Length: 305
Picture 1 (cartoon, helix red, strand yellow):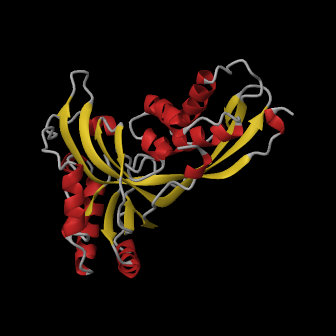
Picture 2 (cartoon, rainbow, N blue to C red):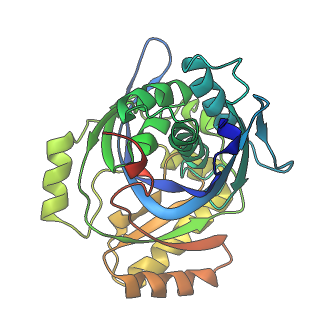
Picture 3 (cartoon, rainbow, N blue to C red):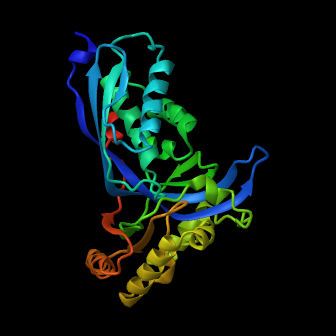
């Protein structure tokens, strides 16, 4: 039996992430920024289908699939090459994606699609590689890809590659997707970007979480630059802050994720999140998502840890 005769893997989830805070703590000589952040997985998903092929081709089937397709296809090709199966006709696949995570929103959609591709093809192609080996490949694809492969909420430093799994309290989020995309490279190139924030450290983050569970520690160093450049993001954040405050949410729990454009409010109450979402929907600032925190990636059980 060839691999193309195996059952396809359908509706594989690729969750979004939020950066609960994002500090730029320095810059390396090669230009990469040193970061400190906490990744929170949430139940906003892209959905990927993987159909086996016996002609060795890796195909993205949707003609209008956004730019994230490139990272998923690169992930598939990298996995096949590393497995030494470039010329094996059984190592082919058709990849289809249903996009739900906003493109250019700072929620990690492309990185998550790439990670789910690695996890799914590890299973489809019967490689059975452990998560550490897959995470090594993930790091070659982008700084955010390893956290999705490892599938757990994490404190991250370095360029985002040094991950420490952490437990986070259950939270409910309101995420606004402004009608704009923010290019990450433009934000990091801003000469006014603060690049010397003093790190919280993992112990400091844990201490602040335990002392003030309804607050978010730290801040997002990229936020000021984005708000200055993109009026739509500033409008969305202002509206969300005002509404969230009306429902008793601390101002520290409303901020931008990653390099934008999405902004979010965090609360420990499902009913408060529902009320905020309903109220801010009428503000005409973009698409509103209600999300819940995840403790782990739904596909984490497909690889050995």
